[in-house]
Image 1 (cartoon, helix red, strand yellow):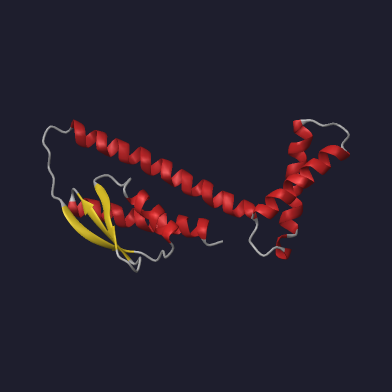
Image 2 (image 1 turned 90 degrees about the horizontal axis):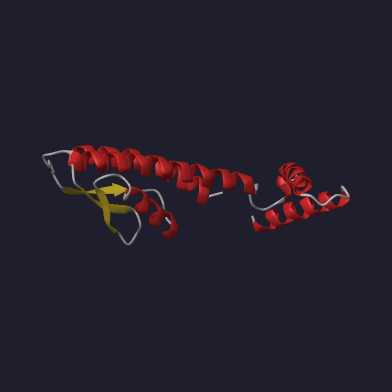
Length: 159
């Protein structure tokens, strides 16, 4: 991926120098020309086209921001509520992710789900133990978030 970025920047500089005017607009247009050239030549590279990975990272970032906003709203509602109604429990979540990076990302993102914290991961990286404050509601929301996060993480790490 780094090789493709460097080739794209080289094409952008070459385009800028061939235009005989060294401005940012010429560099930017050269960068887009380089993107098009690399997109057409992507079958000659061992890795997938690097913009696909950047798009997947941006998508994961948007999912993170959305979950952060919704969890903040949920916590705000919970704090404002006059009576605390808590039913804590621990449950297990099975995952398809294998690498340490993928498991860590999933654990951190699950912690964004309101009222849930990842307590432990089994040594074989197949099961996460999650502590939840509101058992039935939290388990449903964690499972929904897990499916969404797993797909986005796989898109980023397995290209």
